Amino acid sequence: MRENRKKVTIKIISAVLAAALIIAGAFGGYLFYRFNCDKSNAADGYAAVYSDDLSAKLSTDDNGIFRVLKINDTHFINGTCENDRHTLDGLKAILDKTPCDLIIVDGDLVDGFNLNAKYDKFGAIDIFAKLIEQYEIPWTFAPGNNDSEIDGSNESIISFMMRYGHFLYGNEKNIDGAMQFMIDIYRNEDLTHRIAVMDSGMRKPKAIGPYQPISENQANWLNEEVLSENVKTSVFFHMPTNAFQNAYDSGEAYEGIDMYEADPYDGIKGDGVFDEIIKENANITLISCAHQHSNNMCSFYNGRYYQLSSVSGYGAGRDDYIEPSCTLTVINTLDENAKTMYSFEQIKA
Image 1 (cartoon, rainbow, N blue to C red):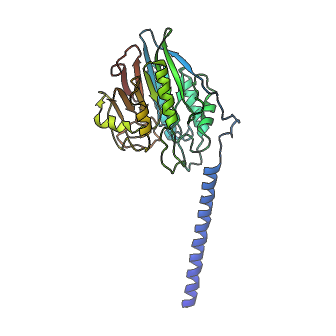
Image 2 (spheres, rainbow, N blue to C red; image 1 turned 135 degrees about the vertical axis):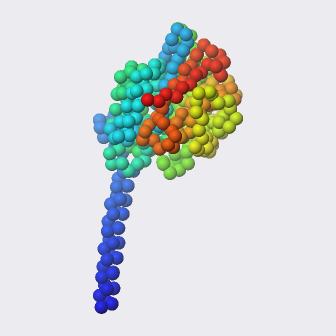
């Protein structure tokens, strides 16, 4: 009797182990497929290449006013799931009521590593881009850390975006990153302001390693570009540098922007190199970032604004007190005073 019970117990344990092995094998196989397949060329075979050194030229109104609407951390999955539809509806409501001269998609447009079988990165980008294109406003993209983690590189995303008529792009040769270029802002024939769009990197290795800091050659490029024209310059990239912590702690907060610190602002090691290189450049008057979903700030520090926006997407992880929004930056390009030339507003649907 005892021997029979022992045999039954062994059979049950063996069956459970076998089932567990089958499930683990299937899950492991799915993980291997999910994180090693590349669907970036599945739709229509677009090439992951684009022109270097392309510059852009835009104009202010007669009063020298130029308005930038920043969208960041939407974390789209496929453009059709519930959170994505909610985000798109919110963005449409904001765009309908917010005149602007340029839209900057400031990183993490799409989600990174995930197990969602319905993830469709380029389908989501297409739906988003078609919404933006309806407004006939120039727009551009500063890559985030999540955008290229799966199903295609940042270069392939930018190449894909090039099919849309109002998309601005470019990349300086021989420096790190997939997007580095200047947008020159003119009033009549006079260059009155510049906007730098930069790639702030991702993780190394992807999704599990430490965040990459902005490299020295990127910082030198920015510093030299700004010095070359000697006009005030606003800089947009995704991940904040260590100076944002100093600005949050010791800067003068901009009235009307809520300030939150759910995570430290100086969490990326090595970004002190960027801060040190551009520290004395008085023509860099704004650095605008995203990335830290529940953090939010705008402070004047060391002669410039440091501004970081919380999420624009309903699918992005965030604390309960954060309602998705976009940031409108209005630049008076004729004002030489870095502190008074900007106004900022967070706009919700």
